[in-house]
Length: 328
Ligand code: UDP
Image (cartoon, rainbow, N blue to C red; front, top):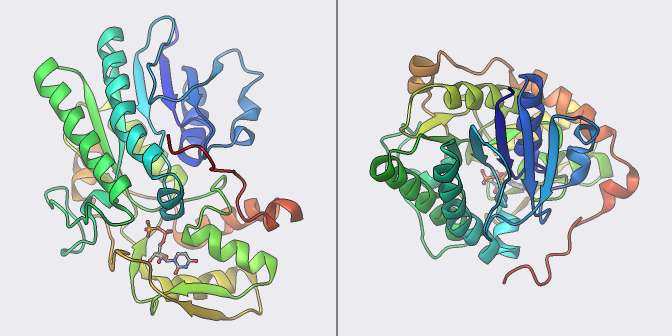
């Protein structure tokens, strides 16, 4: 009998790559998504497979899955600052009501559950790099609060189910990740810069560009997640690439990569934008024997090739979703 895994957020960037990985590893995959920010194009290649099924469902409502489940991976959530502004209440609900439903499902099925947490739980961090022991510096009522606090609550409730009910749980803290299938217009910096280069627009650096990020290629992240799921480690674990750069340097790299003749222009720094971010992955190295393998030059090349396959129409769309009425 094949092991059965439920992946929420299956039509999203990370969810779709996870579906691919679990299919490759010989699992039966049930993908679930409400398609608010996800896109079926990311998983349409899986629909013909016998071992893939898709459920169009919002996990903030009661979740029913027929049959056994061995694993649940909760990866459903808006995940970009623009999304948090547009769909704040959905963002809060999927990380609170959604995880509560999935923890109940995990108990009923006796399944192991992994939650996608985030470097955002560290907020605008006062220490760099960020080890798992750092408690964070989050503005609860700022624009990122709806995401950060939902993710913090998600960690708390997951740990409570682990200690109180003895549920098998895993918590992965994901740092900035990139690769094919990122949404072009979700406002995140990599699709923003590549989209601007492809459309012949100037690259918009926010603030003075001295803020840092550390970008992990998606295949490396998926490998870390897969190892963590199968490990016996229940405490939160950072997975990310510690290769840190400033956003200005990153813009220069995209200019070189794409060969654009456009220039960098500076825009105001959004409120609560973290000034630095870099994962301390000492624990992931020790516990999982994991570290990233793909360097930024290689990863960016693959990602750029993907964005080049998008049509002119896809490139020019500002928002590919209408968010009206979703904040209920
Ligand atoms: N950023 C930028 N120009 C853009 C989009 C983003 O300079 O067009 C900056 C943003 O202010 C932040 C960094 O790039 O400092 C990463 O932003 P992103 O939204 O990708 O993710 P974050 O790590 O901030 O959640």
